[in-house]
Length: 391
View (cartoon, rainbow, N blue to C red):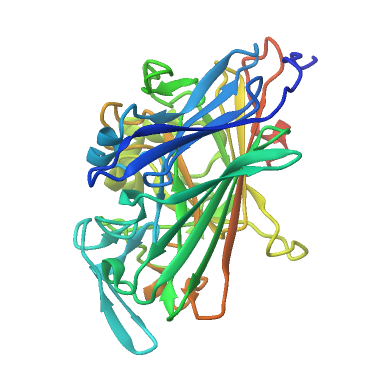
């Protein structure tokens, strides 16, 4: 069965437009870029937010596959990190503290006594500087932010740069770089809420946000183990096998972990209200550490859209939007957050997140969009190159 012939790729386009002022009056811009006949993305200078990502379905009809909001004021009021670039440290740091080189650093607590996503005034609340990227085969935007020494309690002045680009293959790439003048910890991530049905954006020129939940979406994660967490979302031990648990994802519908009866029978799902866990990604011995490797595939049988995520990061935090995400409902999307492990600054056995002067933090994540064949309504994760579910 052949794939539908979509319109031929056209010229890549890039434009910048005002998007309204930030709460402090600083001008905010929206950069829109990509192939108008294929994948286009829109990124805000406020929070380096991925505000829109329009992708054709199996019939060539474009739709927005991320949850988005129409105004800066909506994002300033949002408490769920919709589409944001979060940092300095994605995920949680237990007790809002860590020790580095013998010095204890205390951070503002904003999540049950812990620090989540860099604190209440993290990178998602900042206005970044920006410049367009125009290449022969890609377009996008480069955003920069200076985070001073002591920002949200973290040591060291940090200069961070993130580049969002779309190329002719329909891949959205997010590339991170950071430098510091004092030892610090760094762990940024992109916090997009994905719903491949294509109607997830409430922007003024986008969809109506009537996207429903993601129970029918099918998810493969390239992991054999995960980090179990306590009631506050903090890992409490070493990684454990996924085999035999409902958390294992090998192409099953997400409704398997969203069903209240299933959640009630598994303490990890019950505590979080769904998935909110770090999956430890597989890595073969022959891979280059700097080469993005497969992390996950997400598919929507209704629209036929498929998202393939590849990253240089060791972990993937899968979050099924378990609480209200105004104006969207619970379980209206899934976050696939490529990152280092939660609470790594307090866990010497985890991959390190320390950055020192003279070092360069680098990380890359690719989001590649394809679609199912014409007329197909079934999806088998193994048919897309993922290993089948264990017996």
